[in-house]
Figure (cartoon, rainbow, N blue to C red):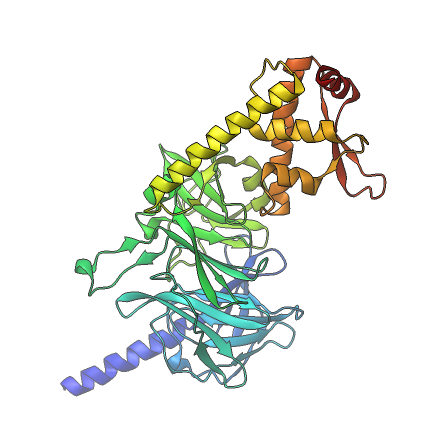
Length: 465
């Protein structure tokens, strides 16, 4: 009797699992959701009123429903140069499917059986190869890096030549095509066998280079706000737009969002001043993977209140970025045990700067009323020595500012801020507006040159003479 009851229960669970077997993901033309019902073999599309409509049958190949998890999220990856084709990955497993909207054929690619260790891993495509970094499973997080090998239809592991983060899980993790690197920061470490099963966060920031196969530690998290937010992942949506991390949170009854740019190492805060969100969204879960998500250049979210009746809302990511206010840097260099030596170097540099400034004033006989910085004085002297009056180029300006290693976009921003501040001081000193001029190069209009206006230039040269 007991055996019979067990068989009935097992059959019921398998039947229920099969009935729930489906793949759901956002796609063209506007980020709406699609789903494949594997039991009915139907492709369905979400309608604006939060209902579904069938758009055709699906042909399935090599898909045993008994191996399909009943309740898990789907990670969709667009295949480069193949507009209608997708890789569909099932979270918490190594299952990888290929789907073609044109033929409506769904085919399982992998031969693997293993599952359960890579829940919430970071999946991405690089040079036509699918990767999976980190994850959680079997009561602990991991830092395993794997990729799908097409010729064997199995997952293989990478073997980095340096020490990776202690875990790659539920932090700031993303592949950045620019630079061909993987960014990883503030990951959650958890093991039921360590520290009474308490989770901890790794303050370190890392970059993995695919070219060298090495992890490089870039520094430590310095933005304290992120540490206050990352207390409960169930209530912390962490989204990657392809350029920014978006992290929603609630502060003094106001819905806000951190906008983190790992390229420029900046953190900005966006406030929901128009009250677009009626409440804070829950974190991404297996049960509700698409309550909030990014697709291309748009943020999508659903509110289950009576006001909006659960309808999906849209918000342009460019609008969020434009309205966000810079609030600090994400990370800085490590606190070194040799900080005493560094402090000594800082003092020495300060003294040398003061000596340099005093010598510059003495040599040029300029009585300055305004307190110019060392960089500003260095640039002024350089422009005065430039007898041809042709101006200096952006590379020379970057060298004066010490920003040669910054990204071009960041360099432009820093140059603009520097020029604005120097012009403010020169106007106060010489009553001339826009004393430092930027003009296009005569040989190539795409490039800019910097020089002093005639009035300020000859005032200064006259004082030197």
